[in-house]
Length: 346
Image (cartoon, rainbow, N blue to C red; front, side, top):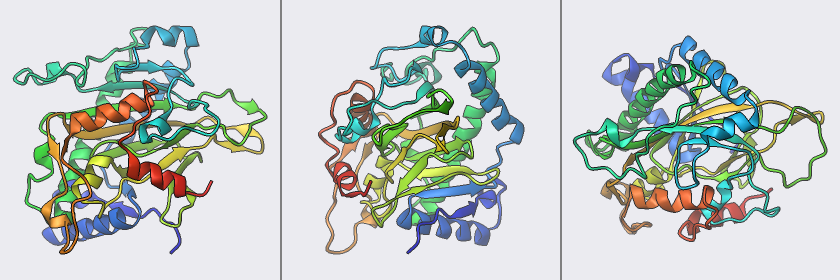
């Protein structure tokens, strides 16, 4: 079967369509999650000017001198603020060491929900960290925050669709997200434009799975993102006009006993005729509540099957993954994901 990322119009869920329209969307999402794990969604309702505002804010920040950007750097244990190029290795979140031992060639800026947003709960501040905003770019915070709330709405809509697609009661998945660890990572592939000699091991962003329930990705229409297909090969994926890319994370793979799989993906340096093209993306991660315990749902365990995963909290799982990508500590718990990387063709 040829690799294909399906396009799905989710407007019946955004605009309160009929039961029949919603059922068609849910069925299409179920098929996509079982066969690919990536979806192109349209009809998501994010205004064009909001997405454009996000892009311009990213341009303003990443366009600053490196020393100026480094003022907003945080320690590896803090998943906020600026991360310079070559300071992370996402393949280590899977327990996989890159052949070249070369960290990823992207720079990023992270924001997310803080403990202060949930004053009635005693949430750990290391998971719900306060944001670091670049005061040298005064328009950055309002533009990014506006998009962030829209992306959160889309992620919550996708969770509603997932519940219908899996045929579970309302609240089965959304009940895990009352104080979800939500983070948005804005990425800029930071190799200088122009002609450059590259060895085959240079990586824009190493192979990895996302950590939580669902990821909402805005990206330039520039090649670079590659998804691992069921054929064992890597396939280029770029959004069509006006679309967002949706992919599943590890928490959803655990909940569905891998009926739906957290799809491996990576970013290779976008090079055309020896020239590196600039590429930007912003990934909104809807990961679930820190203290939510996740294990395969009964509806996803067929007769004669067993639960692939033991119960674990979202917080424990994410801590293991972040220790790999940000702190350089090989994640020894990602055995199944690492085996998939090992079996993939280059």
